[in-house]
Image 1 (tube, rainbow, N blue to C red):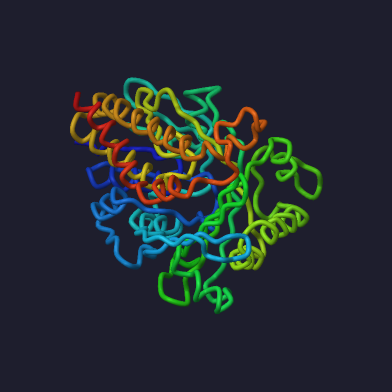
Image 2 (cartoon, rainbow, N blue to C red):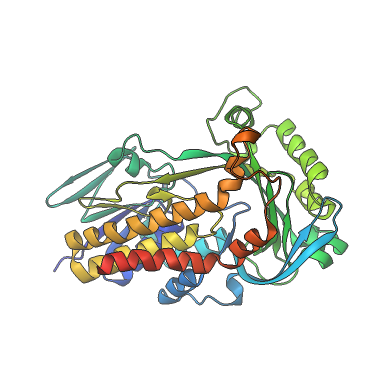
Length: 415
């Protein structure tokens, strides 16, 4: 019997989870990545959840101390740098690069193809064909769209369904551990740090180093700073020095020096000096506009969407990588249990519910930030800063909340 073939469009972690899990169940899975060079993730610290640990172990990747850094303390700092709340926690902070490298190393070189930009998909009763910009046509039994929040696959099958701007951006910075002043390192490096400027959310935590190191002295400190930002200001941020506006996202090297200088001045004015110092020492902080999308459908004949190509959730639940892994596992398991057609039906039913639940969770956790751009009389949250008890509950219950959403989707599938 001929081996089934899966075409995976998108070579980031979602596509790699799909490729490895399908390969483990007997499929030939080939990954097509649009970028001509190997992917890298700058400043992409991520939170992890038990479901992610389990799926990586299922693939034979040990989720041990080399995969992340365990954080056991949370501290809230005021603008003068004084700690006014300290709490216990237990979070494992990893990085996009650490997860990516573990998954990428499992895919044979001939099954991971760079510089392959998809233009369209064709399918019939016998299979599915991916057509690329260079004229290449690839035939398979299944096509998986794992090509991110601006998915070409999704655009073909759900035209007009695009992520919507949530009204705020996440400024990001990352500093190598060795470049952090010793006094600041001793005070903060092993802690999860919050600052709460009016209407904003600033958080910082340790992550593996730029080459995925978790040994002392080789790690890094990651900053994510959520700031309400009008569409007009976002357009200005996305305009380069030559006056070209790049829409709602701009490559970090094109970010204007005056915008970077403004962001660093804002850090000095609004957050604790210890973390402002870390933010300032990064020569090139950058930002990501926050979007979300609740897709009405994620399976189309022989085509399935997963990860950010299926649903774009705000990052507050810290579940983007975990969701991609769960999508890929459910896809592989459903097809193995039920065959392609019935398996995709089961995948659509359960992961549609799961994705919608994660999007709703992200919206709920980010509602305070979205609310801040409304006129004061229209705000749901009249207070200026986050309620600490509510924020800590969210911080410590994220894995439990992801589990609730997952259980609800699995109960739907069993009904």
